[in-house]
Amino acid sequence: MDRFRPLGYALAVMPSAALLVIGNEILSGKVVDSNSPFLATELRELGVDLERILIIPDDIDMIAREVLAMSQSFDFVFTSGGIGPTHDDLTMDAIAKAFDRELELNQSMVERMERHQESPVNESQRKMALIPAGSQVIDAGDLWFPVVIVENVHIFPGIPKLLQKKFHSIRDRFRGVPFQLARVYVKQRESDIADHLNDLLTEFPELMLGSYPKIEERDYRVLLTLESRDADYLVRAQESLLARLDDDAVFKVE
Image 1 (tube, rainbow, N blue to C red):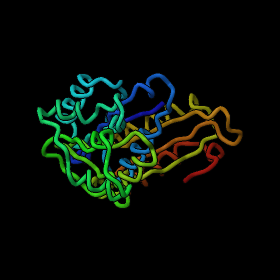
Image 2 (cartoon, one colour):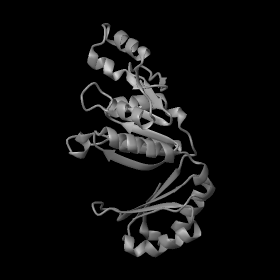
Image 3 (cartoon, helix red, strand yellow):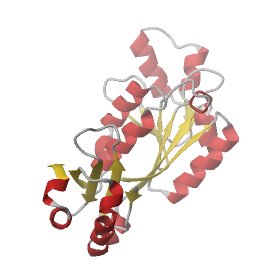
Image 4 (tube, rainbow, N blue to C red):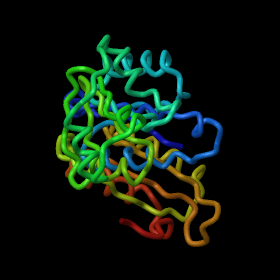
């Protein structure tokens, strides 16, 4: 059970985000998506509300449609995948279509590639330097390929290590109020404490409360997570929860 409640004023001012994961290989199961959990964790630590994750195939029209819809609905949009040199790398073309822009050869990206490999680029590599006109290009630290941003859409590669390095190079651009987290490990069954959890949410309606049965654990049966952007609110909610539970019901508190 994962119980969510509105966060009042905090929700209204927190930046929102969406992630578009692009690639037939993800949908076919050939590749396991590890970029979604990475970005979900990073954005949560930064206080950005990741509200949607969507996985779609390498289809220009579909990518363009979803990118535009996300761009209009969220503060930050991230795309993962489809920016390499091969025939199925269609993300740049699709984003250009979404915003009705031409693809242009970015000479600074060409020069970066040539410096990196110490030789002229070939046609496949030139394809990687074709980006939507008017894009913002941001240096990605020690990586030769920069971060490309169109409107509020941040275009990342699908390779996890590269995505992570690129994200960390611009991480400070994304800031909200981070969530504070408390954990309570309970030895009782979830059904035994359900009424206590419902009562807790009545008392603390802005609390984000998660309840996760752990049948494989020997020392406890349920992990409870309490989250709030207000540290004092979180402390009071945790104290209220502990007061509701039997003394011998709690295995550990973090």
